[in-house]
Image (cartoon, rainbow, N blue to C red; front, side, top):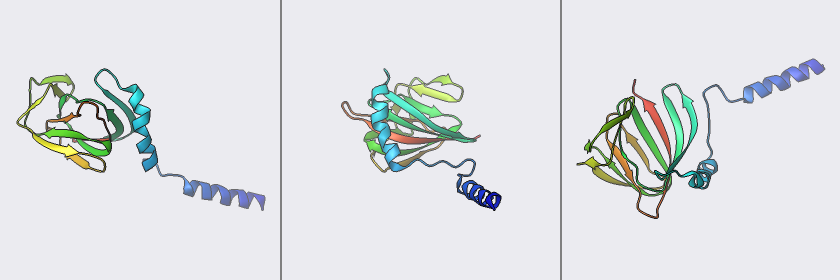
Length: 153
């Protein structure tokens, strides 16, 4: 009888376990990253925390206290979910003085002829691969967001 009870308890535990590839981050946990990452901001005014890697996509949380470089990912799209703060996203156009900084990654100081979009808490943005983009954060402000990088390959 004890064996049967142990078997049932074990089966219930296994059934309650998360399936492979599943992950969940509660809203309170995501909100806490602003305070966790702020002390880790580097000279480029950015700090990040990887959350996971799943085949063709990765998830991270990023905290910015200053504007970033213009970027173009040749083989990855970005999905940005703003948690807190505000920024101006410049999207489209052309990366000025573009340089390849890593395989399939292009950077530059700015974007010429891009479209400006204001982003803030709760906003979700999709940026396709091959699309120039740059986040501009006003002096004294910050933005914290989750980012999903999806490989187009």
